[in-house]
Length: 368
Image 1 (cartoon, rainbow, N blue to C red):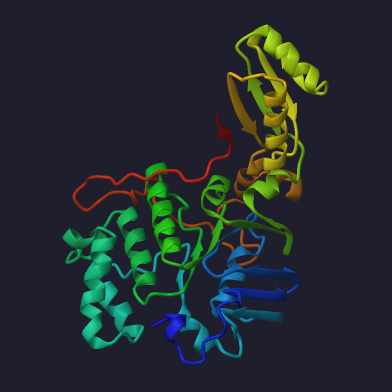
Image 2: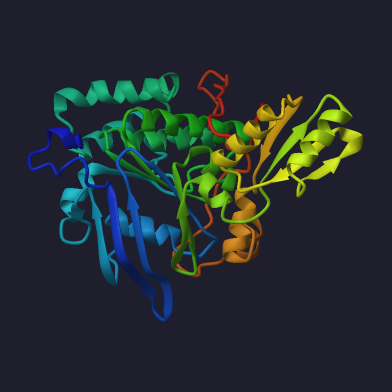
């Protein structure tokens, strides 16, 4: 069991879920991690972004005790991943780029096997397996061989296997690579449910919209180094391009607003005005306050910020998608490997053929 609140010798709850200091790893003469520092608070979702070969999977493997670093220190809930790996493993779950599902076993048998390996009490195992089958909508297919499952069903089963022992920290390494948009949305909803129960999520992804949607903070890894670490909105403020777009009901209102911000760009034919800024809440309050003081009621207001792709390009010198394409399927600069997924992976497909839907909780812009 991984409930830290009931574990003997539990560390103080103020201690972070993950603490990394000067972590280094090389394969031969290729340096993969060049001294990274990272901290993840309990209950937080951290997304680690980076091009292929940047060291994302190596970082996950070290933190999940699958690999040893060459030097530096990494702790999970205060336990050293090298010297106390046996104490770390019961606290974590890992869903990698490739499914750990055994196709010869049924869905129920896969879950029962993992429950036994996790040393869940025998009296609890069957109930926990039933709970996970229901939670991931796999009940009707639970007695079928996993080899007959769709790609999306296998992905759901893989995640259910990861969660069966109630880990306090879950590593999701490229969890939606190859999934269709509906399936990705279903995975996002599952992540949201985990966070609501207090689980800490360490996510690696090559999809910037996914990081923007899910992450409390985003760390950008490039050439073995963390080159940025901030909230999604904070990262977007690192580069110019933020603005507030205002629309007005009359040319008179547009002219009066233009006089408040001479640096703003007006478009008379559209009765619109773009006020440059940093994309922050303080600037928005300043603009709204100025309009109110002048007695001007805008017809519409939109806050536009640079996309994470713009930020990624500025920080690394290339866009995320372009980098992944350039790397190619056979690029093995370190242990980063493209996931071999079905072209259409229906994670959202229920066993009865229907599809659950999800809702968006974070947006790239704010509209009024």
